[in-house]
Length: 59
Image (cartoon, rainbow, N blue to C red; front, side):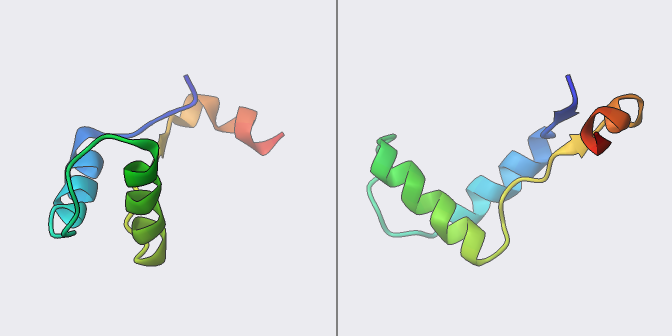
């Protein structure tokens, strides 16, 4: 494992998307819409990189 996304990052992401007035249906279009809005507002969950595996990312 190189990195993980902590639970609180997902909680922040879903709290951000809760105000969107769309049907809460887990379809690809809905997920794409959520991620597009999150990218626009820089709200995607952050990945935490383990320092032991950081050299794998640098290559």
